[in-house]
Length: 205
Image 1 (cartoon, rainbow, N blue to C red):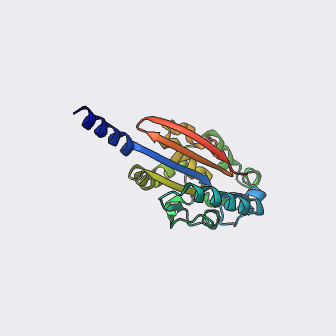
Image 2: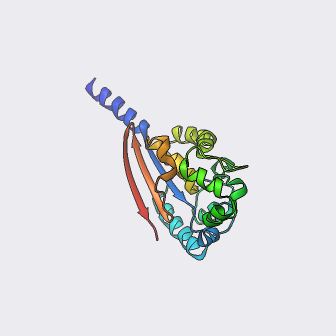
Image 3: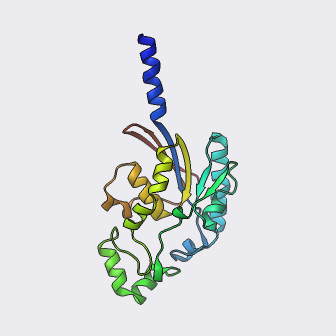
């Protein structure tokens, strides 16, 4: 009976364990120009990250598809990973509305009121004709469901998107989401077993 109980208990632990990999796309041409939004391709450094990421993930021999946004910079970041790819529009970067394709300096000059409102409350601020972090929390519910129903998952997405996903998974307050540190060229690995979280950040460049 004791052996049966231990096997049962071990199965529960195994079933509750999750191995989650999150990464931003490699550096993009817009990153070099400090522009937000758009659908630019990878810079040379971003292409190097794509190769490094591919090598690292392929060596792990994961059994999961790769989830990316529909934007070229995430698709090309996953280019060298030898796993099935699933492109999801819900993983596209926050819609910056009238501020798309601008730098923050240009936004401050062109739309000073919008710039100030965003600075005061990044969580609730909605770009004119665009989205807010609050909108992203709602938009990303389906990907949280996918994570909850899979033991292993790899997501290549964007800074605002990953801030929300990471914030939800690590039980941060919503007010913290817009300022969470999600660096370029870094693979975040979260091992989650019930409420226990072990985090490892792998800098590949």
